[in-house]
Length: 429
Image (cartoon, rainbow, N blue to C red; front, side, top):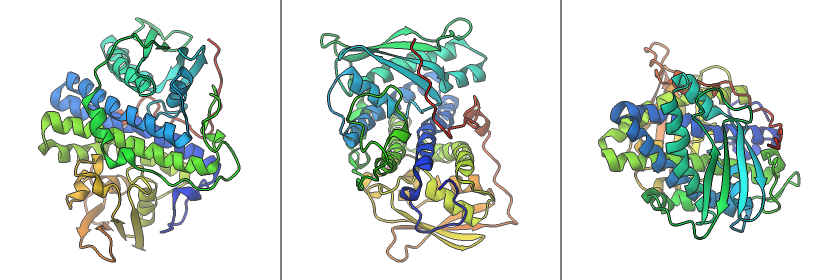
């Protein structure tokens, strides 16, 4: 199923065929980049570049150890060696397949290498800044050093990522790719202070949420507990576990956003959260929606398109967020959220925060990215649903202007990257 031509109120991600599941999975991994490119300029504009770096560290160090653990549990991955660490990278939303081209060499339980022959995040920074060395240092040194270590330490406290070379290079990108790293395990390597948001995020219902595992379909690996595969692709997985992995990717992005907003709340207070959510969603929704439209062949901006794209939106993580929708006609629809883990998870839950406060914040910006003449109204609960919303398209209204940040979010090839087929070219360097 690579098209979704007619709105189906009973549609679920599990109905997708394996090829579409794998492609959709890569799209969901890429949503972490869409999120970061939208929120970080907003932080920098308000509080400066150092605040942006500090928030990036809090969000990745707060989220990645938690979702790394979740992915290992999902796949029955045991052990504490470099092979387990590398599997974690292969399932990490921070390393979207084909956007970051990772390669691996496992030499022993305690030592291995990984390198990137291409890095979309680095390429984007180079494009946006004209190859500014300070900007490259910020992302490839100040941000990556602590966050890489936090990720590998989730598997083994004695693990560290040691750069062999990485940007800034002082010139052209090396022929072998932008960076190369050693992963080393040494129990005498010394302690590292754990980021406070790792524990805060880990206490959330989201971090502890359990997806139901369906019966195997018989068309791939039912988990990734076996030997490490240097050329691992999502297509290697059984359709049943792949469908769950997609939900996990969406939840991982949620954990990342949760850590980000917790950091902002602690450092800058509650008042700014709503303003940031609105601007954040307005900047990122058009970019990931355009990619979803291409994948599922969704055209137009009538209510059918609005509701179909909401059903595919990663912010409404299936099962963790229980939603429903009703198509009334081409201009009117309803959307609702039932009692679920997300509602019970506390007030600050990333871009969904405003919904638990009885507002339409976040949801309205996502809808208006589909149709700028649409508006969302919270309505009294009906039929036992917890939060209910009317969505109306008014053809006579003035369209909401697009966010000026959209161009930044989609730059560096992110908007047009083709994720249709993951052909893995292994590099021996």
